Image (tube, rainbow, N blue to C red):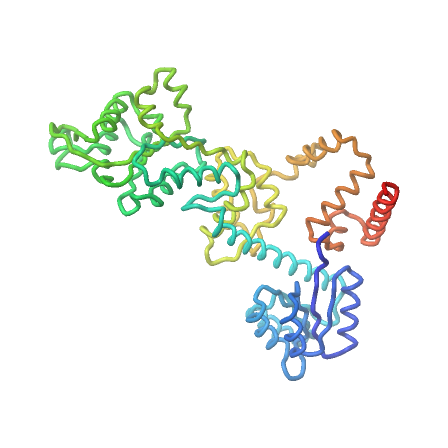
Length: 466
């Protein structure tokens, strides 16, 4: 089980300090006392506290000065200030300087614990954010690609092998899986990185215009061709052209593209002189090109020319372990100046979705959530998913059904199921019994008794086995 949270209480009045330390200890929080800002700084240099509660008015160094020095030494530690009612203005000013929260004397037990819970959650989210950033800088990214799943690591390894070759590549996968990101990563991590990368969507324009875009045209080739125009193959000379949605290309253009791949030269529309080009072709489609070939809608010889190296990107629902990394990257992309993170409940909700639109849909959902979120935490309410209708209908929400099915398969007793769920909740809140009891809807003392009974039962089983 995770270590209990630790809090440093700073107050020059012994009675107030000891009372607050005792209150926190009774709530399952490890509390330590310091009688001055100087003592607090010395203690925090040797121990990493999850939060600091400090009085504002103290001799020598006051709470605001302590806040300033702690932010330099321990910037990730949230600081909560205590103040008398008449000094609220100074506390509010201190929050502008980085204090997490303030509580007024005389304070209620509930307000202290609630403020600490928010501080603990903020610290946990920031730690998770830093962990994800470190992960993104290590083995979970390659070029512009992000992923921790085995499937993504296989794609990373394949790209490393083929990025500097001249062979054509066919990238397949559902819409929104990141086929263009794969193409860009191949180009910009390979020998052609200094040359142009030219993308074009083969469904975005009619056949005649697409031919002109790809191969160019000479002046007077058709109505409106007032000047000679170079095509995208010429623009990509020495580099890479990315043909997105190649499965939608017309049969006429397929035959012309095949000739380019065979001869390494293009012929502009209306022209009679071939132009030599050195272009690597990366094509992508969300269609099953084998089925398209069998149906006569795609040329078999072109398919084999394109499919020299095949890369398939699995849908996001088959690699849920990539969702936290992608989500963090999208949040940083759309809000680089805001420290915004997903709550554990919101992240769990994201992992349960089927994501028919894959990473593109995930990015759109998070961009919307950023607009709705007023603070630094995105919760389930900012996500466009109905989490309440299933509960109202009496049906388990997505993900809960798997848990119940597992319990049925293992034929767990009700007592065993309750114990297992209680243990999992405690793990999810890092052993914080106050928060766990609130989630479970039981009294904290009941939770303590249940834990003690479970520990005794476990000890009895160990004794019997030995």
